[in-house]
Structures are given as C-alpha cells and as structure tokens.
Amino acid sequence: MNNSINYDGVSEGIKSRAFLLYWNEATAEYLLPNTIVLAIYLSIGLAGNISVILVYQFGLDKKTDGRFFIVPLAWIDTVALMVTATFTLTKNTKSVIFPGHGACKVFMYLSYVSTSTSLFLLNVIAVQRYLKICKPFGPQMNRRWKRFSVFICAILSIVLYIPLLFYYGDVEIRNQSLGNISGNQCNKLPGSPGQLKGLLIFQGVGFFCLQ
Image (cartoon, rainbow, N blue to C red; front, side):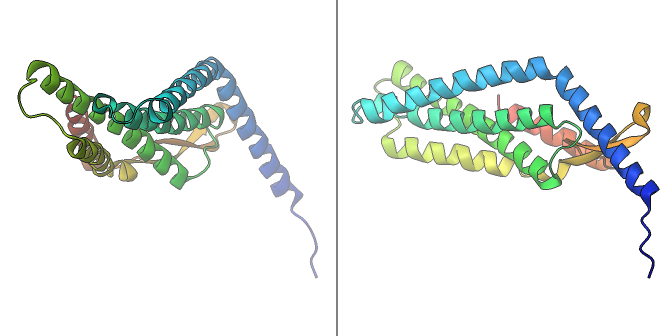
C-alpha cells in the first residue's frame, strides 16, 4: 500500500492560500477608510430609522392619515440600509474571497430591490402631497390606495430587477504580481456582446424608471 504524501502539492496549496489571504488583507486595508465611513453611516441610519418607527408607529395617534407613508418608508429604508451596508462591508473585507456565487446574486438583487422600492415610494409620496396641496378639493388618496401603492412599489421593484440575477455573480480574478493566484469577486459576469448590450439596455430602463 502506497502511503506517500505529495508534500510539494500540499505546500503549493498552502502557499497559494497564504498569498490569496495576503492579497485580500491588502485590499481590505486599502478600503478601510471607506469601511469606517460606511459603518458610521450604518449606525446613524439605523438609529434614525428605528427612532422614526418607534415614534410614529407606537408613540403617535394612528388615526392621523397624513403620516401614513412615514412608517412604511422607514421600514423599507431600514431594510435597504442593512442589506446594502452588509453587502458593501462584505465586499470591502472579502474583496477577493467573496463567499459564494449565490450570495453575490442575492445581495446584489436585494440591494437594488430595497433601494428602488424606497425611491418609488418617495415618488408616490410626492404625488400624494401634490394632490393634498395643489388640489385640496379634488380626489385624494384614501388609506386603501396608500396601502396598495406601497404594495405596487415593492412588486415593481421585485420584477424590474430580476435580470440582475443573470448579469451578476462570482467572477474569477487573477493577480500576476503574486504568482498568478486567483480569487473571487462579486461583479458583472463576463458575457457575449449581446449579453452586455442587454445589460446596458436593462440599466437604462431601470435608470429612467427611477427618475
């Protein structure tokens, strides 16, 4: 029975892993200022949104219809903040060892969906304020339509950004200066010119929908 071990192969694997971790650590150190600022924004944003939720959902009179959108917007902003901040912090600290193809797709998709839902809801709030201020004697949004508009904003965002699941994922990158080692980065998937053209069209449609 042959019990010999290929020590050369083992040592090469350890060496490659060490270089990969060094590469990731160097990149994370370079992005450290961005990570610190993002962590500060996350703390302030969470504290602000949670305060709004506690005051407007539990502390004030719920019969007042003019404040209907404040609580849904605060909840959506809280989710968007947590998802996007977690995603960006993960990209900053694990920039070349991103944990998985599926995690990249899910994080990217949820970031866009939560953020765009908030932006769509701001447009609805603008319409509601316009009707209340500029046309006070005309038709107004009742509570049923307000709830329905929140639902529509979420569904529209969920459907609009489904193509992101096909255009983003774990992409292999290489570092020639460290012995041509390979790492994984969450980014746009390499594709044919047709796929890239489709991505540009999709991004253009998404941009105009958010205006």
